[in-house]
Length: 144
Image (cartoon, rainbow, N blue to C red):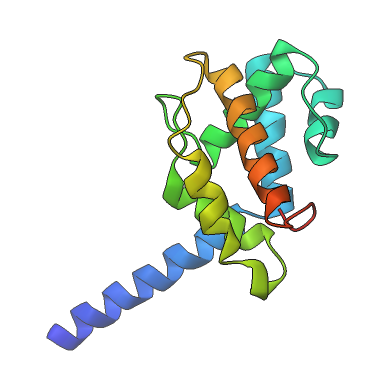
């Protein structure tokens, strides 16, 4: 009986890991961005700016980024960066296994950043911090 319970728990953990990895595909990110586009009044150009690693030009574009960050758990409902989830996403985005450990330094440098109370502005501030520290570590798109 104990073996069956442990087996069920193991299967559940494996399934959750698979779902978590699938959540972070480019297709799901685009789907989340499209959902957020409707919620925030953003445009296709705002989505394109995210995909091209360009800054947001409008309030709607900033709010789009905040919404996407929240959908993936990178930002919580209080507008704060969620370290564990941000690291998980970074580990997936970084393609060079030798650079994956650098993500920890990047995220830790930004996790306690004092940001604007406006979640849309906070998303931009976190994004700028993460980008700055990623570049310092030699992690450039598409690596980060």
